[in-house]
Image (cartoon, rainbow, N blue to C red; front, top):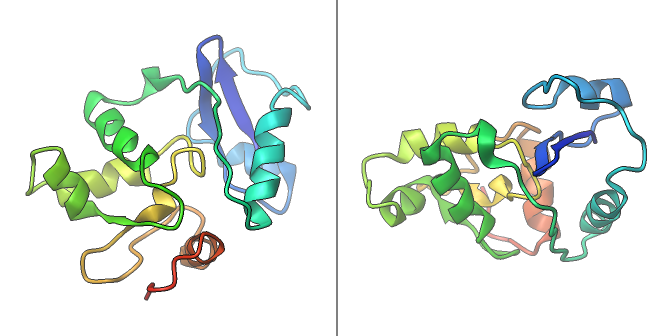
Length: 154
């Protein structure tokens, strides 16, 4: 995993990769002036390690939302509130936003989530019971949901 932060908080987080270089290349955005500082996200790293062991964790890192649109932030704040072991559909989120026809736009916002795992976009699924997409691949999405106790996944 790799992470970028600003003085306001976490800017971007990559999903686990087999090599550190891959993790850095998968960061959602590049931030000028960012530098590699091993150990800077020790508490975040520990939380993610616990998460992948199947423990329910809450990450309290402040998030720097400046690089997301207002709509994406609204979507991702709803996603952030989905409890472990539960899911919501793209349509559910669109309805909650008062935009019932915006499920595809919700999907685009979720797919651009700069804070995967911290904002648990793997908990968003399709209305028809399918998993939908996931930046880390469907196999990882399924694994994350199973770790959290979600059993009814296609």
